[in-house]
Length: 484
Image (cartoon, rainbow, N blue to C red; front, side, top):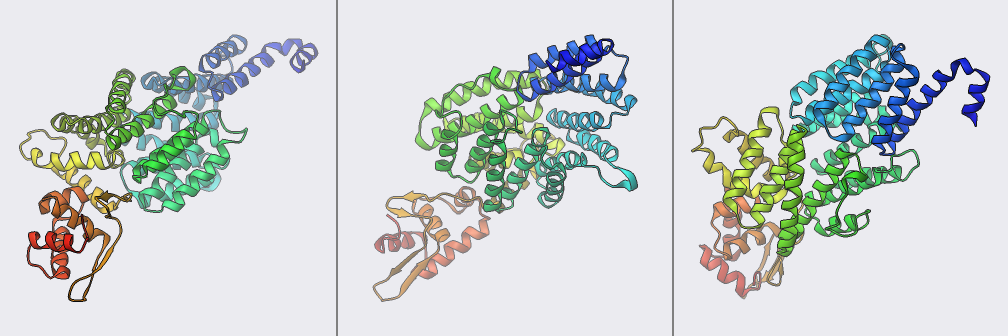
């Protein structure tokens, strides 16, 4: 009725009013996930407004660009974004110009061109400067982009500066990019060992996702990141709980592509694969593992077609984890080699650390084979740095039970001589592996410890037990019920 009232009052402006409404409808449709409907509204806007007004046209082309971003077609998105940037610059539409430039950087990073994405963000940074070189609020989206690249490169301190600043500057524009910034900040906090800080951010984002200002998919994304963070902490129970509390109560629920923009569909399915692969390995359930393989094969075809290199790397990592769980170590190493060769040139790093203990296990097996390889990538230095990062991060491990002994708890026993023996949780872990016949090198790889550290633990164990070798240590430990 309001529209008809305006048209009746100014019939000569009806084309302008209808065109403006079509732009608004297109944007709202995008935010609601109706990408096809958004495209139709954009066409209507062009019909009403034509291309005579560059400012209006820049808004229309931005809508079209976001449609391609959400459809998953990276190449077409980049072509459209470049066109939007050109038109927005001509029309002095700073909002469209900065948003399109930041989106372009995102697409370039997704194509595996992080160096190019960094340069693009530098251009956006310049655009987001106001009078006296004071950053505009839109600079928050630029900072988030910088922070996400630094996080992927595992430059955590630098990433923290950009992400914190970006999230604050972005304010309440959750739908437009602050959600991604908050999620990246939560990932960063956990990588820094601040679990409480990470979970506090997720709780805040979860509350925001329930608001009417947030897009309809945000709650699903928040649940997915909570699952991933729990898996990275090796907290499988929490990961299961988060998944069941989402809109996908069953682990094998089929996630329909048409229900989400493609990039979110892809993220949710990859999260599902992370979860059911871990469940399959933990429970020895090959049904989960084979389902993971099927989902990854399907996603891989689209990732290749749409030039989504970051996705391809994650798929290779997950495929290698599935292959390892199914007992095919040789194929797992070959697949992970492909991911490493694809990721090293542009500085991918965090994506491998997020692969978890299975990826770490395969990496330790890869190091010796690199010595016989003539390939430039992956380099032995890159793999060594990854292995060292796995060891240094001291990922939180859940309690592991061997026999009746919880090897995450320290143990105090009294020997016949009346002398108390105290073994730390780590020493108990090492002792259990010694009892299993593992060499120092194997213990080093399994626990992600330096070889000298393992030797020091063994020496301390012998000294505390008053023995001289492994055999005596195991015998004495069993006598004292330190191990089963």
